[in-house]
Image 1: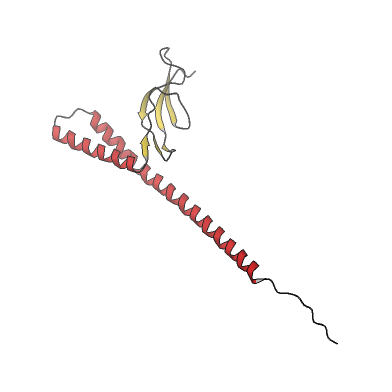
Image 2: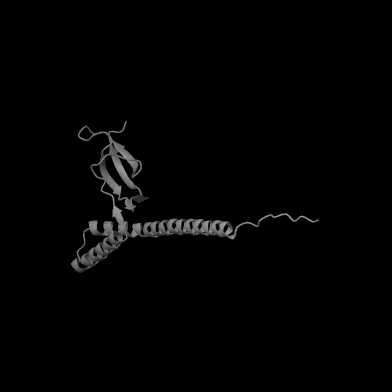
Length: 146
């Protein structure tokens, strides 16, 4: 008499569930990777336009005899700021605040008793944030750092 073993093959449901779980994990990982890459590229693109902001700011600070030219530069400046705002890019308001190395880069220090220790007394280059992440540190002058 011949005996046959009754080994049962793996249940199709368990293989399907494992494959489904693997696929869902793959989709989640891919979505996270794409989201991170999108955010990084948006910040890099925004950072590439910040020198334009600096140039327009300096141009507006210079005296100009041609009122129409000045008005044109001012319109371009405001348009750039509106575009930044629509993308969530915000300039930092650093003047008079306390120095924070997360947001600021100290390029000079002064000693003056009328200022608090680590108070920012001058902003040399405006810093920017995008979605609460620094895309450019503000360059500042800090008081009373011994």
